[in-house]
Image (cartoon, rainbow, N blue to C red; front, side, top):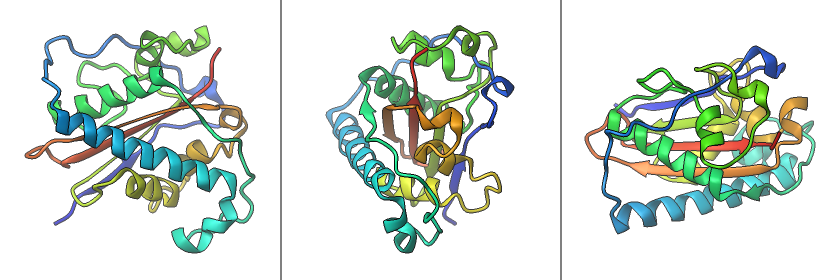
Length: 206
């Protein structure tokens, strides 16, 4: 049976979700193969390009995605951030290698501090708590094997009553409307629970 999971922790009021953390598990040492690097680079580019096309003209993708985006406002093209891309890739890899799927890692830490530690500065109030996440959408699934497919599924947000992934990726709420920087990471690990993992970070500086 194919396994498909998408997850985001979200809040219209960012103060309801604070976040912090430490660096990724120092005991996790995984040699990067050229195949892993190429897979990440190809899929993150495809995901980024597709996401920007949808953000540029949401209503044009209503039929393709099977959801009504006619009332979604156009957003500016996202700016690629190497800092966010590094944090996103490390998160996708961490989930695959340590075989979990969550915003909080097995050590109990969320993403905001890891974003900050990667060199992307966040507002101080977003770094006060250990576990929360303000800027991350994650996806995983045995048959979700490309970055574009995962972006599509996150926007569709089937079964997610809050439509949190869609709001995050398309900048629908006030908090995310001015988040203009993006980094995406994609990782594959055979034998893990879901095989393919992706992390999308769309954030704003302090």
